[in-house]
Image 1 (tube, helix red, strand yellow):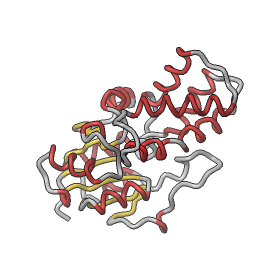
Image 2: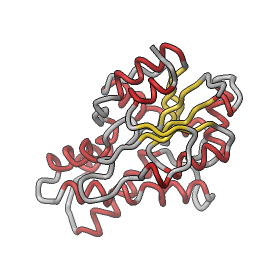
Image 3: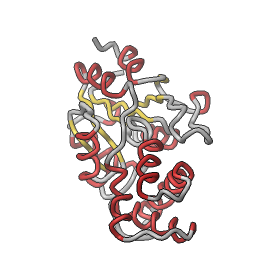
Length: 230
């Protein structure tokens, strides 16, 4: 493969959204089951983006979608929270811990390749998240730049165009089958990274045997080895 850019999904692939969100929910809403709350909130993630992708609503960046999903979830659970608490909960997605192998794996991969964060997160969200988790990316490519969401081909094609490479010269790394299916359909190469704990202790993450990809790996360090980086 003639790979020049390695693009990484963020939520679940590079950072641990479940633990990060649940820990902050536990502090802000001490009377709810924080893990269950985080999962229910995440369940609204793809449906909310699909409404944008399907032109059922105008473009809205991810913080807006997260706020709308949060308001809906709080109503469903009959939980009271003032506006300040709701704002702080939305910003929980800006402060998530990296998986233990993410920083060291990215550092190795960027020695040989351009590394990019390619996420549905908004540009401001990703900037704060990448800085807070000390993730050594060369650049941030938010879906906000394409004004649609993965797995829309426009997101992947925008990333390739901005970095002046052909789609097939981009390797998309993700822990999610839907993301890799979208990337492959857009002409990118794909690498699946297994994150068994991504959805918390009670739900099964995507499994390697169920995902079609050019490469399968169990960590960013393993991916670095497969890509022949130092």
